[in-house]
Structures are given as structure tokens and as C-alpha cells.
Image (cartoon, rainbow, N blue to C red; front, side, top):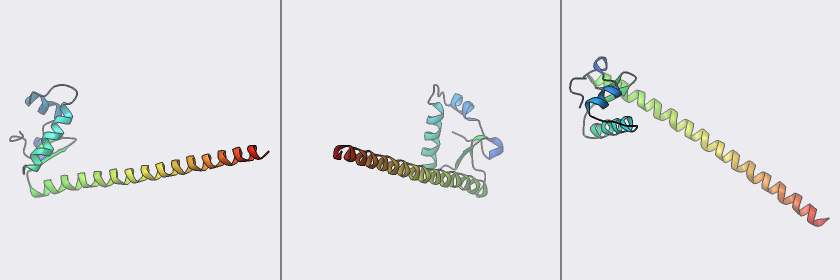
Length: 111
């Protein structure tokens, strides 16, 4: 798939790779990512980034790519944790408002 695109300096942009692979339509980029992931599972040292897709030219290049995606994953995990905290805060406010409404209704019934 990327035989002539060894090293980041020889990367191929996703659009051109999609053309080479005869991928068309709105899902071409998603399909390229799936192909890249599957090839990695099969032992191919495929990297991707702003430069496009390429085969790692050295262990250091592969380490750099692995470090970048690890950092991205960590940032996504942190964001996910913050979003869950916000969801919990929203739930607490809804519960608190529901309790207040119940108390007001009880007071009305008592009058």
C-alpha cells in the first residue's frame, strides 16, 4: 500500500492515496484509517499525520509517531473524564431542582 512512501519526507496525502486505491465518496478517509489500522495489526509500520501516510523509515520515526498518538489518546481520555464530570454536575443540578419543586409542591399541599 505504501511501499514507495517510506519515511515522513515521502508521505502521501490521504486524498492522493484514496485515488491510488480507487476509494471514492464521503467515507474514503474513514476507510483509509481502517486500512491503516488493519495493516498495523498485520505488522506494517504505518504512520499518519499532517504530512499524510507513510511507512516508518526507522524505529525512532515509529517511536515519534507512537508518542504522538499516545499523547492524543491521553488528551482524549482527559477530555472524556471532564465531560463525565460535567454530566454528573448536570445530573446533580437536575436532582436538586426536582427536590426543590417537590418541596414547593408539599408546601402548597399543606396550605
